[in-house]
Amino acid sequence: MLNTKIRMIESFLNYLLYEKKYSPKTITAYKHDLQQLRCFVSEDYQIENLDQISYPILRAWLVSLTEQALQARSINRKIATVKSFFKYLLREGRISHNPSEALKSLKTAHKPPVFVEEEKILQLLDESPFQDTFIDLRSQLILEILYGTGVRLAELMGMTWSSIDFSQKQIKVLGKGKKERLIPVNDALLHLIKVYELKKQNHFEGKIPHNFLIVGDKGGPAYPMLIYKTVKTYLETITTKNRKSPHVLRHSFATHLLNKGADLNAIKDLLGHSSLGATQIYTHNSLDRIKAVFKQAHPKA
Image (cartoon, rainbow, N blue to C red; front, side):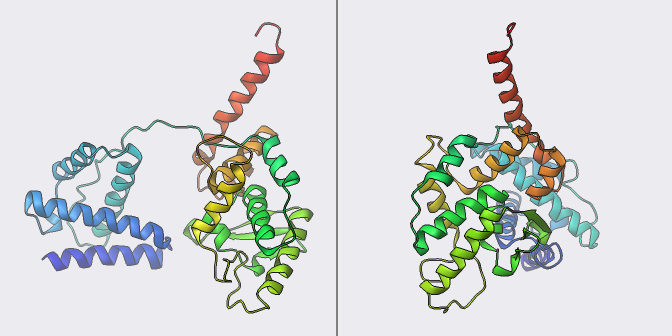
């Protein structure tokens, strides 16, 4: 029976991978969550049949997670995994009821996204002494693309030369769920891409066995830590904020657009968000800016 349960999990993961087109990273997180649940019900309740799992058992599992001092966001991700899993099994006719249907997500504190002030970003991009070397041009391009387009780390790593449409001045991005979107770019970024690409080909003597835009020091596809280290190194020169990740540049992109009066729906499309709710987190920073302007300028403030 245990093998049957494992096969159900594998079947669900294959469904997410091949039909829902989830990323390998997301699949790994789902697999870890379900394996954790499987161990819990096997050890604490001696249950091997998924149809025996009840709502109270799932609640007990969540209680055990809170006792491990997991953050609410982490627990909510596990709740989403379990709900998706049992919904899949019910639809496939492998269970007769859905024990996760009544599970509720935990309340979380909504922290405003971390961003870097516009003048500091411009100082970094316009005044940093980038040299005419492959490494420096790569660093400059990483920063310019992340801030100039607001793409995610994985989206940047997945960009190829064919992603760039020079005539239409736009970049095609493959986002979450394999959804494509087009992001407009300016002439300066397009010129930098051409300069970088030429330097890259000369640096590796044209011996690059793939078409990815950003490459590692030895010519292979870029890896996450390379991007992280590049962003952190340069952000440390302009900000003392604790977070200095590629996502900070994405947050800065969205916040600066909103501060300049960009429509929230347009920002949503540029970021590749599936719902407007995900984009509304940036309105907090915008309201803070409006309050600061009012306090400084209004005679009755």
